Length: 377
Length: 119
Image 1 (cartoon, one colour):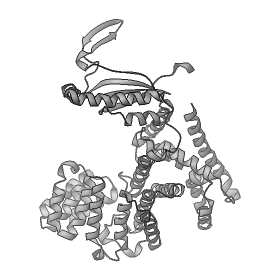
Image 2 (cartoon, rainbow over the protein chains, first blue to last red; image 1 turned 90 degrees about the vertical axis):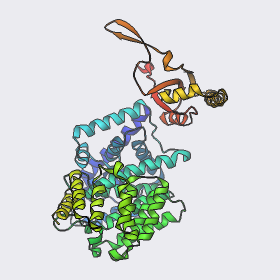
Image 3 (tube, rainbow over the protein chains, first blue to last red; image 1 turned 180 degrees about the vertical axis):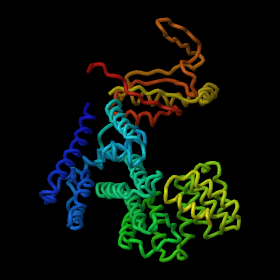
Image 4 (spheres, rainbow over the protein chains, first blue to last red; image 1 turned 120 degrees about the vertical axis):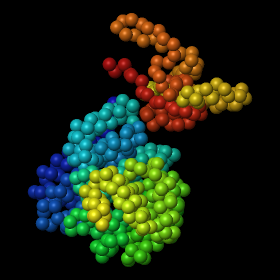
């Protein structure tokens, strides 16, 4: 039963450090060198407490100082936990729930509200996953070199899933859950620190940073979504963009490209345009082509078609979009993209119809109100 | 830790296997035998067998103490089990590593074996 022993111990430490932080920090302030576990797992809670503190920013800066990263043995332990939580023998839902629980320190209630599922469902997922870790003896370790790339891919997709859910929620409660997106960024930067020579980890981190950098411009005062062409680019966080680009350049220097680096490069091109008309669409289309060569995906094809509409015109793009009808008919962005392109080629009736279907399929409140506004004309 | 690797494939794959030209089948068998020998020599395989096709299967259903014998495999499935291996390895990753190199194609289900020694 060694597997559960290790896993439970790791999780217990998480909980302990959480409790300790909750009790001590408000009274005694941040310790000189907070425990390594605290750094990873209790950080979020600690920050919640610190937010009530007037000197929050100073303390936060202290917390994020890079020389406070833990030593190698502690780092390895943390990586083992992440790789165990993201083992492909567990269902994707269980991987996300387990990672949030054991690595980030979320409660089952917090995970449930983040993913809009019943708390009992989350609790059951976690119990089942832990039982499978024991019964099937899922090893508690970082995979060896030969396996590492494929397994790291699994870890990155869990982080990406977490980020996307936070960045643009599928649910009806909130348009964007900054806390989950922030946690995903933080966890990815942790993995990047622990595995500094993996370009795709840096690629994903750059992608997240570049997206977050533009987030203040994504919603207007009423909470409605503002699309890229209409965004006030002066609201973009230029320091964060520069950071994202620098991370991407570090990844690029390792000369082993991958899908996250390419997506980050696309985000960087958007971030680099001072105004909408300056966007380098031909380059973006080429990057989407490269992305498709690494793995065909209808959603990537849809995004490529949007970019293509600015290079080859809406009619050509609409042809490409229509080809995706069979696979993407249940995806609201397929219909809203068609709506946009149909309007551009002067088909208002068909455009309206497409936007109606998009509205039927979409739950995110900010996206919905944007569609409603377009439908009202 | 003991696992059973169950080698399965679709009914069509099974039929295609049976209809294979003799020479092709011989090389395919050679690859499978090589896999078995390699892992047996390394002490990872403690047992296993290839099963005859599903048409040779007979099912016994025990219900309320009465046994009913019927023709055919026990569940109507699109996949059929073609054979199995009992392996003794360190953990799931090692068992999955073996399954990934299985030269027979199709599907390999990896299931841990209940250990009654600790009961």
